[in-house]
Image (tube, rainbow over all chains, first blue to last red; front, side, top):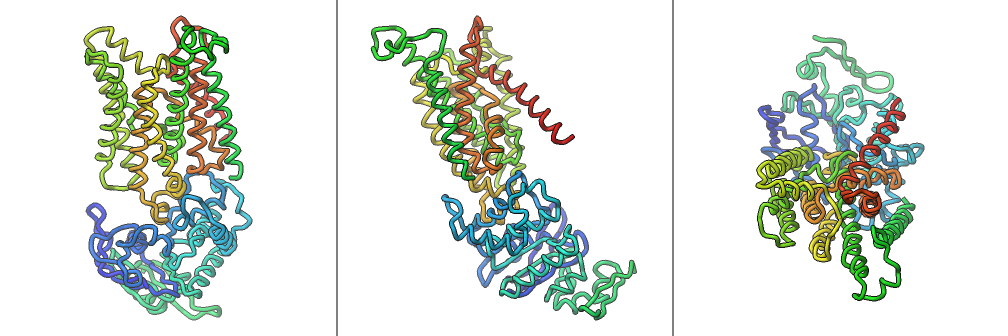
Length: 254
Length: 324
């Protein structure tokens, strides 16, 4: 379990997060939603141990996350940034293998590392891209390859900043299935999402963030009600049970 | 990736051949039977007191420049970075140039001043970039240091007491391996080796940095450790190189650039081959500089700059073809 208590972060003269408390269960997907600039990405980077909050603390299974050695933290927690940066035209498989960095020593990849890389490539279904140059991939292909990179470390926690943005509907469903699969294996998944319908479908917990505060938190159906979405986004919406599960329809500006 | 050992072997053989040529070649041809008879022929001194130190220095200086170029390109994630970016070489120049003001003629004074300048440069660099782990602040600190140190060198020229001193400074700045003694080799090589060892330790972090700063940090890479290794590593290796040879540009830029396709663009795998290729480039440049018949021997720094222009032109055309 990851537990965040009273997290506050200031960037320049802006209070990006103001006393956020939330807990995230393993074996489930938790979605963080909210309007642009609500502090979703900042919260995620704090939860990933990459940004030390000005106040508050994050505990990973009872231990102070920001007190962990970076390597130990990286071994159990994978982070997928929102803007997928790749500097050099390396081969896709080499890129995925970078996910093993927290495990490798000076000798490079062990047989065990290679096997984990193969599994990650298979799970993310990017085998057909394995020998391509990363810089020649499309945006969506690159996002899937980077997801494979995050899986290569076989982390207990996956923290992904808008992992579905830029994927076509088919690959969105693949990625969603993949995260559901991780949760079913008992791993924890925390994602920020803009697609409320997707949040409703895959997340068992939803945290609605507005202006750096938690506006609502709870099971997806309880946290994505029309009242809460009106207050958070200023939109009218309705939720109903469709033939294939619950549906959120955003009707328009209120 | 499996081709990397053979790449390293090929480059090492190239360096071996060039080193042999560099040892044999010059204005005076020395027959091989003279090589075996120590002392009784003045030409023996040419071989062992003049050319051998020059060859050895060429190898190590080239290694330092090629390796630091590859490491800094990996760190900045920019193929146009070279050791001069961080201002360490300018600071070493400044340190060396300041000693030319002192009227004493102690031979080791210039390299010592250069090394001191490089050390001060590294300290300022780490101080300026502060406790943040951002690559950008580090580069900015380097740019500032470079600008200030270059201005300092210009000031030294401006205030030089005699035209003779100006001449001396300019001559030294142009960079050359000529007339270096065994003493200078003994001075520079330990620093260069230590610096290179530190730089070679950055391979894994540089690979991870392919994913950007956030990506690297999320993989458990400590960017402040990386920055420390880079600053001290370039300070020692490039500082010592500049201190004994003056400014030799272009090597740190071209060696990694030429080899990148051979290591599938992996920044960490590029380090060692770039070091060896750097040695080859410096040796080759020095041989060319020696063989071109000019009234005064061509300076290596000048020869390198003359090679650099066409190289960038070819790079530009190549890039335009790819984009268009």
